[in-house]
Length: 396
Image 1 (cartoon, rainbow, N blue to C red):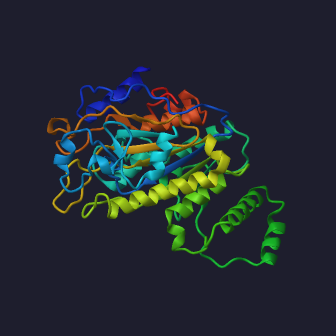
Image 2: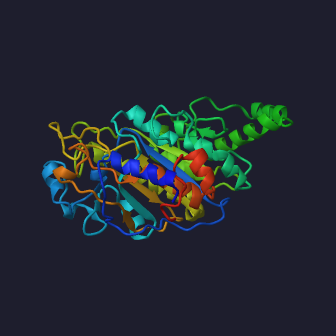
Image 3: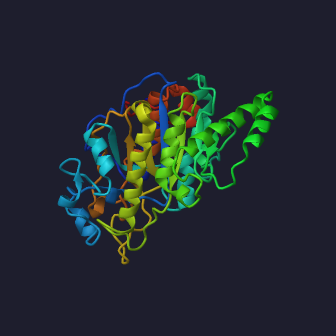
């Protein structure tokens, strides 16, 4: 490990207020490497700050129920992962993937950002930098030239699925996008005329053909033209799987899910947050089904900009916090394990006396996926994509 990497990781832990931590789970193996041209990656961003303590409840930590007298579930309500952690009961697909060795759980996970602004936190998560004012391009956009070098795919290397292109794909390199159709369908004659017009244009012709592929895939989904239903996360997840499973489809898809800001009436086994978990879980099942055999070569990373307070507030909700939980799933994942250096929830262990303390960096996970799953070399990651991280810390 270089001095630069060591210093970056040391600053991360010092920012959490931790002098040292003890691994709760020894070494991590997330998955197996393969041909970079065969690998697929899906990034899922949960916007609004998901409550990782509710998603993956540390029922073995005695302080948890004291901090959350109305929100904590008892251990018999949880989908137990081991003798310490359990998934929320609405995350049934994730629990099955864990049992099948296709899901790794990250806990006490956070980006280098240590404030509690959604906008700034999402900026740091998506730019892959240390602070929100360091740059504007997304780390997946900066990955594009390396991905095109490592595979024979002739289409877009990365694609955003949804109504807007996320910052993580912003930058100087071309990426694709798809959203549910809301405009009237063009006539067959119009399509033929456009094909003839663009046929000899190397730039527009290729993009028009890709657009027709998007239309064909979208048409295979029931009611894909309905704009309201198009916002349903499972519809977007199905579209992502359809695109990635094509021979000339993208290597990467980015999905977004909003509504995770649960300041009041968060709920426990049922309620606002439980509904969010159910939608996420259904989306992951839809993604797996639409990927088909491509699932075997895929990793799906689910992360959020920061976590929520360890203690519930006076309106039976939780406020903006620091560390959260994340999920890595897919057929390319060597899962069935929890990766955390658990800091504990007793008063003296909380970050700034209120939050789950971070002990694992999102950027460390990003770098490992880029290096070991997508085949980008360590030096390129450390200097050009995720500064200070090279992908060696976590072994895929």
